Length: 103
Image (cartoon, rainbow, N blue to C red):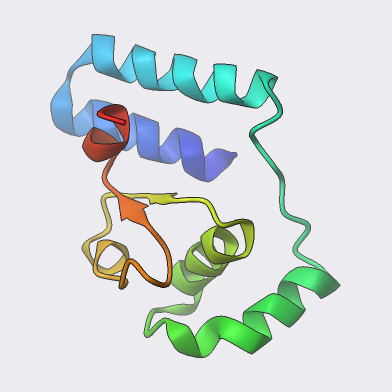
């Protein structure tokens, strides 16, 4: 959940658009209330998925963890990171916060 807030805060720092930032926070909160947010247990099942799929991503370890989490959950990865945005869409869908807001 910390990564989600980091992304939203980063969006605010870049845009200074409080209305859009507040809308994004509300979307995440509403999504979580509806049960959309899933926490990943970084234990055996995640390690097994990481081990089986890390080769799909030519990234630093920390970035690979985020990419693998999105891959495992079949969720889009919302990021400003240019390397993560270059991941082929057939592996995971990655969006900037601006693109996510337009959904």
